[in-house]
Image (cartoon, rainbow, N blue to C red):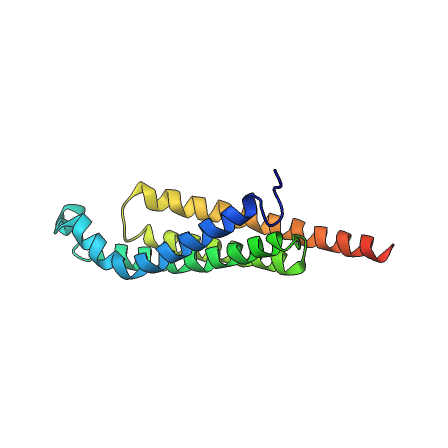
Length: 155
């Protein structure tokens, strides 16, 4: 089975990425209703009347940055499916996803003061670690592109 190319796993991943993006856009508009239904008037149980508003803002913020990140991943997979995996464009896209994760980490760090939940702290740490790991991957991709370009020149 071919992993890279028109009939491989990367094609399936590109389609799944598109499906996740579409789901993210739908959720962007459904979040106020879903969150209201899930909390069902229990805002006081969490100790703050503004809990719904803060949580909704955080989830919308996360959704928007997630859509942007998945758009970048879809473009990376498109390049992989076009047999162009090691191009500078992919390194830049990985860096953009890293920046989205960093912005999410900052948002969750701020949310720690408004939403008293261990999940907010876990998300903060998770997005910070993902951001740093993707930053390393972006640098590795950049180096791979340089090595590839140098090798093509030596022929």
